Image (cartoon, rainbow, N blue to C red; front, side):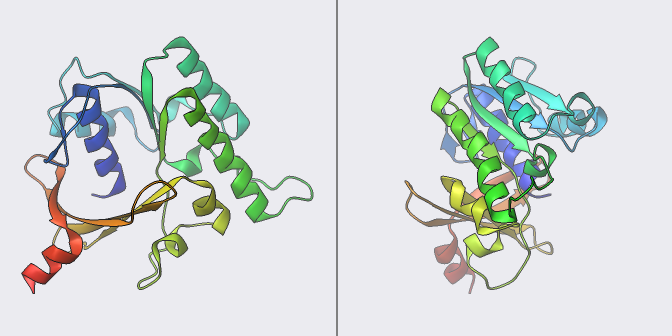
Length: 212
């Protein structure tokens, strides 16, 4: 239970015009969801756990139906946006499944990270928000940007970074957000296993003080 569940919670709220994180009312939009680490059975099971309505405005593509990486992956996403301009949110689960993964001659890791993230970022110029799920280093005590896996080019190219820091024992987590156009914020979350959804509890620092 982690970033994939969180992303699917948000995707379904957007696709139905529902309530995200149990608190935030959102407007309905069409969502393109690349579930590139899921089998059909696993993805359907998650949708069933969340009681996803049949008329949800979400188009999902699963692992077996996707082979493109690097520029080819972005080109395929662009074709979906061409065919259906109503897509306003694209969720990529995970970033590693669409990255090229090999160094070009003469390129270093930082340059490659910047180039690959920039290709995804440019999709936002088409009036579509792109959310790419990625792994963190699990390093305790480091700043959010330093915990993003890969070189500084990954975090430095993204407009906004969301870091889900969860406690595997008690089912709680903090969602940290930082970026160019957003104020830094930390949100306390709790996973509700009965409905398979992350629920917002409030400001993470204030919730922590109340618990203490």
